[in-house]
Length: 292
Ligand SMILES: NC(=O)c1ccc[n+]([C@@H]2O[C@H](COP(=O)([O-])OP(=O)(O)OC[C@H]3O[C@@H](n4cnc5c(N)ncnc54)[C@H](OP(=O)(O)O)[C@@H]3O)[C@@H](O)[C@H]2O)c1
Image (cartoon, rainbow, N blue to C red):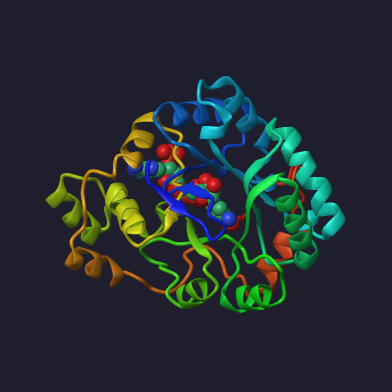
C-alpha cells in the first residue's frame, strides 16, 4: 500500500475504506473484516456514523495487528467544545476498543470547534491520537483556524471527486501543508458517475473500470481516498489501482470534468447547517441528506 507522509511525519495509507451509512452492526463488522482481508489498512469512521463499535470489533477479530491499521474517527458537532470533545474522544476510544486513534478529525466547522481543536492538540500530546485534522473546512474556515492554533491540521477531509476537485481550496492546503483527503470519491454514484463517458473511455484503454480510473485520478493528484463498498468484489476492484498510470493528457481530460461545486450540499446553506446542528449521534434520527 502506498503511504503519504503527513506534516507531523506520520505515515498514512493513500487509499482506505469508509464506513458511512453502514448502520447495521453485524453488516458493518463483516464489511470491515472483508476490507481488511483484501488489504485495506485505513478505516474511516465517525461518531456520527454510529458504528465505531462495529469497526472496533472487526479490528479485534481480524488477524491484522493493530499497529498496521490506521483508524480514523471524527468528533461530531454536538460534542464540540474542549471538555465535551475530550470526553467524546474517550468514548470513541472505548467504542473502538483501542488506546489510540491514528487520526481524529473535527467533522464539521460548526459549534465550538476552537475548543474541540484545543482538546485534539492535548490528545495529540498525550498520545491518544497520532494525527489530528479537520473535515469540511472550506478555505475561509481553514485559513482562520490555521492562523490561530498551535498545531496546524494534518488533514482536511473534503468532498473531492472528478466533479468537485476542490480547486479553490488547494492553494490554502499547500500554504499550511495540510493534506487533502477525499470523501465521496465516487460522488456516491451521483450524476451517473459510474457511466461517465470520459472515465469509461479512459478505463477501456487501461482495461480498468470507471471506479478504478476515478480513484487513480485522486491518488495521482496526491489525494488520499476512502471509497466505501459493501461488496467484496468492488472492494477488490477499488484497491486494485496501483498497477497502471494515467497519462498527462488523461489527467487533463479528467480535470476538465470539474464543476467546482458540491453534488450534495452547501456548507453555507443555513438549513444545512441547522440539520447538522440538530443531529445527535446515537439517536434514532436517520440521515436526511448526504454530506456527513
Ligand atoms: N467527512 C465527511 O463529512 C464525510 C462525508 C461523507 C463520507 N465520508 C467518508 O467517505 C467515505 C466514502 O464516501 P461515501 O461512502 O459517501 O461515498 P462513495 O465512496 O463515493 O460511494 C459509495 C457508493 O459507491 C458504490 N460503489 C463502491 N464501489 C463501487 C464500484 N467499484 N462500482 C460501482 N459502485 C461502487 C457503493 O455501493 P455498494 O456499497 O453497494 O458497493 C456506494 O453506493 C464514507 O464511507 C465516509 O467514511 C466523510
